[in-house]
Length: 514
Image (cartoon, rainbow, N blue to C red; front, side, top):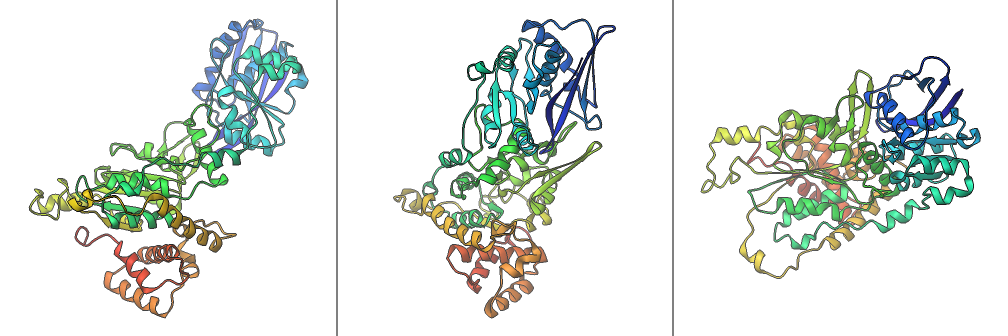
């Protein structure tokens, strides 16, 4: 007997439907899986056989062939266990044919018949909805994630016996399966709070807080330089709390990445807060950028999509790891090529980096600094010029005076900064309506002149800056985009000379890089 069960797989972030063709015929007993399979899929044979036996189903001694079509695309993962088992149950005439119509099955089987969580459910359900499939059957832990997509019925099942009972007796459906009813908009509205601390708790460091405010308002990259203990990590950790809340589109993008990576918390339907990732400086290039054997997995530059990637102790990262970030920072996406094909992951994040000015941390204070000049130059030289060119804002932090530590905290709070950033964001939303830009940091070089026009005064200031500082074309454009954000924060449409001069002050200091 021959049965076809609908399933799906993901390659990168793109999902595609897979036909699980199960044939049970006479002949020597065997169980064969074909269709360009990874090792995890090949192991399905043992998992399915034992799970069905322990669930009370005896597979007949027959010649069993399972084909996963299209056979030309490699399949990885454990999500095909459930559709293979359902196909066998149908061939054994334990499931009616009509119960499988317009239904997609996903799930890993435990040896006791339990249906376990799998990766990539959100993009798969999105593809199923586009293809006109009316129902998806997923593990109970993935049900909330799948229910985010409207217009499709979701069954969350926890064991093979419950699924079989629901398929054979529709009147038991509500008892045997979990069918969540949620609205993504409500989840997003309820979960927008970001408990990251208040900028009012950061004593002094007004220059760094101003840089953080500009970075959050325009989605610009930020580098903080200063000795140990001056508050670099405190400032970085509070930036997600002043960023604009995720839109529904952004939330679905971020959730899709977490789903493919298998990092979506159990029972959570959406990522509602902007991501914040702070990898250790020993991180490998594959972990940061993405990669791995088989289908490349997203790295931290993609997991931080629409959020903040914080690199503390920047020069301690391996040089090849930092240089690997040049394309993701510039193009807002990362392309990973393997022999089987190429995967593209989004990587639209704010880079917030922090570093000491030398190995001991106290340069240029020669009363404390113990480093030789060659040591300092070697340390700073680990940050290449192309990486510095891609950083819009560079601020210096100095030791805090005791008066700042003792006085009552009256500085601008995170809520005050967030309110001002929201107004600046509204100006940007109006400016970029109908385009693919969202923030000033997204403006492509070809569009800088259109969105950042200068008056006569601004042109003279910019010409003087360009010649005096010997700017590259990339830095010239980044100064204009930063000045555009500063003007937006001041609720000004025109970019003035003051805005340009402040933006130019955030370039890397010649004290460290000549």
